Image (cartoon, rainbow, N blue to C red):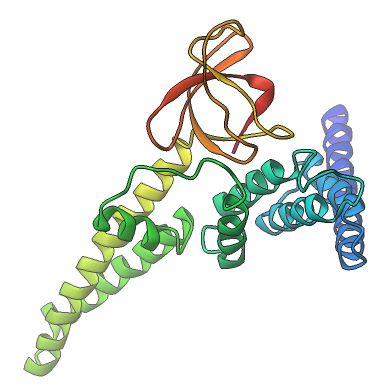
Length: 264
């Protein structure tokens, strides 16, 4: 019993210490970014990630710092020469994964993606694009909460319809119940869709200094079928030894070394 209490107390202390350290890193990162010391800002925000205390705001600021670092380092022969673009895009995606409604992260992501060499994709239908747009306005938890609110409203107006003797109130209850039922079904579908997309997210970002070869098979001697730049988004199909088979936005598949991609 005593040992369990001591261990529990020690765990609490470590958690509290990590929170204090994360807060210090945050202040350090924000200050460094404002002073245009982007390398120090990156190190500070990466410190929070290493403590497993990252939030959408942390990933967003880390992405901004990487992007600015890649553009501002005068010692580089060209922008993003040390892979900063890929890391910026990776962290914008991670921010949006935690908070899909973060408009600034989505806007900056689009700007960053414009610097890659592989933006071709299979066009989606209007309905699919609209569905994804609506789904991204909230997290799965947000849609779940909305669904519960609509269910509660449906029950209340349903009782109003069944128990009220006033014809006008019954009519209002009936029409509001229809709207609440539709909203409940829609928000529930969006919650399930958002959760499913989160659980099955197999996206990754190419991380390299410039471009990296994609081979026809998991062998460096095999044919090079593509050379995507840093920041290109792919989907992971399977892994084999030090290689990963990936699928590009246009449907083409190939093998890339594990060291050159990082999962979102």
